[in-house]
Length: 281
View 1 (cartoon, rainbow, N blue to C red):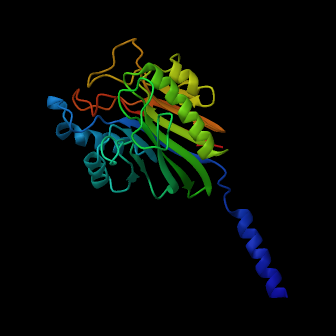
View 2 (view 1 turned 180 degrees about the vertical axis):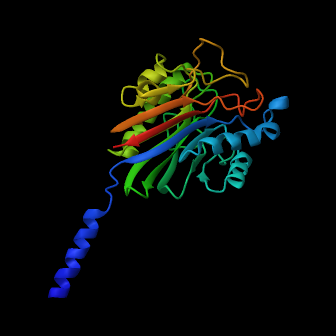
View 3 (view 1 turned 90 degrees about the vertical axis):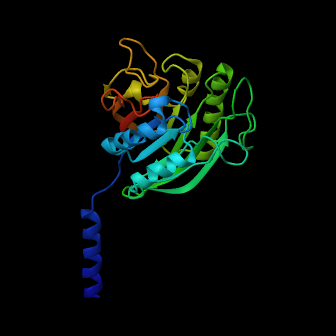
């Protein structure tokens, strides 16, 4: 009996002295890497792929949502940065084409559930498109288990249509509906290229009804409100913030940054990545 009492006391003491990992610190990046078969002359994938790699390495996010990603581009990133794992699915019927690839650090996060849906009136039917969308558009998502804190979070990565204004507005509604179905009351992080101006466009306003824009709520903003430069530096005093990181839940957004990484004036992509450091309470 004395041995049992001593053992029980020791276990209780150990439990009490263990740190309570109540918070989740995450580094998140949204990065449209420009599809790798585009005829971009000296900005073609073969000339800039290592700039993409070095940009990611410099920030070392725990989660990266890339857009316009072809399978061979995802394979290259995984080969050059093996500490990441990833998954994705092409947006057309046979699963090929551009993907909303999700990269994650498996030492930090474990994907328990993964899936995809399309930004249409039939989101569970592959390759569907509606309204004035020029192409099938989609979202990929994961329910992650945060290993240290032993908590779940929901993450989604997407890319809205570049031509259809109504399609972009309706896509925000589809995103909201699907997140509510899939995530429940879990903390939510959304990354993407939304092809609309952050702050006052209809897609942004629609999402902002239920989710918070990290650029707006961050304690520290770094860089310009400008994420599409066409392989060129940002235009001074011009806003072109079409890549966003949204969240929902008890978050503290420490900082949100428009990443200006370049090598001698050559940029990794025609989009500037967006990077956020967040704490989930």
